[in-house]
Image 1: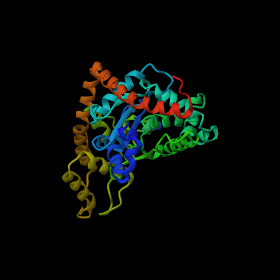
Image 2 (image 1 turned 90 degrees about the vertical axis):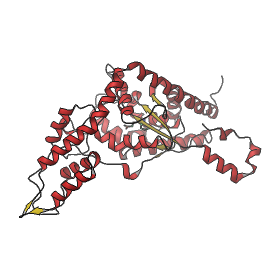
Image 3 (image 1 turned 180 degrees about the vertical axis):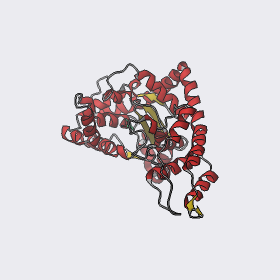
Amino acid sequence: VSQSRYYPKKMAKNGVLIHYLRTAMEKEIVLSGIRPTGFLHLGNYFGAMRNYVRMQDEYNCCFFVANWHSLTTHPDTKTLQQSVLRVVAENIACGLDPEKVPLYVQSDVPEIAELYLYLNMLAYKGELEKTTTFKDKVRMQPENVNAGLLTYPVLQAADILIHRAVKVPVGKDQEQNLEMARNFAERFNHRYGETFPLPYAFNYNSELVKILGLDGNGKMGKSENQMTTLFLADDDELIRKKVMKAKTDQGPLTPNSTKPDYIQNLFTLMSLVSTADTVKKFEDDFNNSSEGNCIIRYGDMKKQLAEDMVNFINPIRTKAADLQANKDLLLKIIHQGADKARASASSTLTAVRKAVGMNYL
Ligand code: TRP
């Protein structure tokens, strides 16, 4: 929280200058979170992580692992700690710098839970039941429709509002949760006085790439079939095997054909991990013919893609593995992250308690 909020009133005389100073000093806060429920894959990397790794130099960022959220769908916590540490390690391996960005675990910041309680009084059963993600999860786990699942968007709003974050780098599927966060913030402000800025989804448009599974059926990572997803923890041989098994066909029948989704996806992947010359060569092969036959050979293309993919994933996997082998370092990183996050969180919570009238201490 910036100092400028506490400038004495009389300093506000020179309105223009003060306004300028405020905006210059109050760097907007970007907050991003991820649930520790699966292994990170290439879709996560190019769809989200790369995006906020870039943001860390331009904004005041916070990044956390949403382990409370994972309880709503994964009540068995035997492997949860390990997953949390893996997600932290993988994010650092992808370029997130814990010196620049407080990197913390949700459950280490109890202030979030208290804010969640206040926000729960402003969230209505009807609107929560209408949320798409809730309806999806009810379909997936009809035997465990718990209140945590219903109030998932309230906890997510608390994650964001506890730092008064205004920019949240998330994909399309999270738009509804962000809209709800804005609603809860607005209701709070309306009932108890201006306390929260309104948060919005935020991305560098050009950086959001949609990656399909290697069978071309839907987003990477969505399918049950592990062979169609490239995980950042996959070893070199497995990467080669998956890429070589990617869906192709007999090739285009005429020059300059439209690419089917699964072929376009291979070109997209290539554009992300191969050199521009390599991509151009295969684009040209796809679009040209020789003696009536299209030139491209998908086998060759996949071999090239497999090697470039190995060279891309290998250093990330190695760095993440080294970090996971150094548990003390990982714990130190998240403890530091928690300290910074709690400093910001408790200042918001003090204002919240005061606004609600819960300030006796
Ligand atoms: N719901 C998000 C997801 O499934 C994870 C999340 C929880 C989150 N709290 C957040 C994302 C706060 C951004 C901000 O991806």
